[in-house]
Length: 317
Ligand code: HEC
Image 1: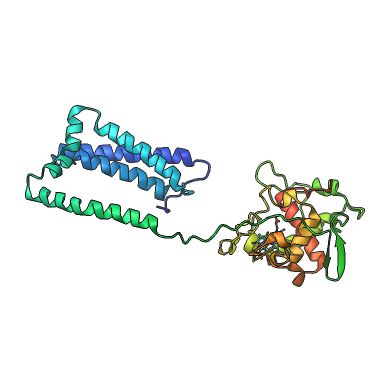
Image 2 (image 1 turned 135 degrees about the vertical axis):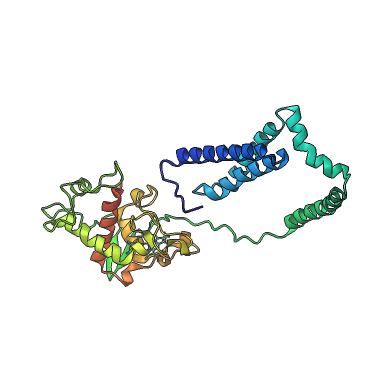
């Protein structure tokens, strides 16, 4: 079912169209069958249609619908099918005929069927209750503080950085002074996707200062981080789903957008292993980058993450 792609943004229209097409196809087949004298019994028509709807919801619709919602849709469509097969006396009679046949058991075949049901139904019920008595072996829920309180200061490559007063040495204006306003005005545009500002292209040969550092940060990002955090910085890297917790999605307003730049510097330097006690059970695979990158490289990659997502680092207020 994946060969026919659902197009993002047009999915509801596409689904309605598909469903309408299928229903038309059903009606046509049933019409042709009854014309040629081989009409399918109402009973099976109803069941087939319902099975179709439920399978469509389970296997066709993407992203997958949770079971509770599918159960609700399944129930509603069951009622709809029931209303359809019982809409008039004659249809209703035709629908319940096969059931009546089994209950009456006038022929040998129906008698065998009835005996089979008499044996099978208790066994199925027994299976359900047996299943519900089995102990539950799901892994326990882990409560993890995603953004624990940072330490007051952190030591990276022998230098102590006080988180409240440190600044990204590459967030500078043309005069070489720390300037968040200047750099904020040059990050990507967020309005329609993420677009680079025309006069602020880090890949321009002549880019200087802040923009040049963004480019260097980008190179560091694509050499070290994108395997996990993704090409688009959305946490959907090649290896992302091998991990639990999955890598942070920087485009989500709940990550770097609500954190100070020095907090990110500390997190990147120390990784999952360097999380404080609230970070228990330290299951994060985020590597401690101080072991692989210089202090400058860490600041630059942080600069790039803010530039690419179009978020401003939070300031200490
Ligand atoms: C092996 C996979 C992996 C690689 C490679 C990786 N990360 Fe991570 N990163 C994670 C995971 C998993 C998390 C989420 C758990 C956590 O917060 O520790 C994370 C979290 C983070 C966070 C915290 C975000 C927040 O909201 O607190 C930052 C910042 C970060 N990564 C930056 C980087 C940078 C920069 C690099 C490259 C230099 C990088 N990561 C490379 C796996 C990775």
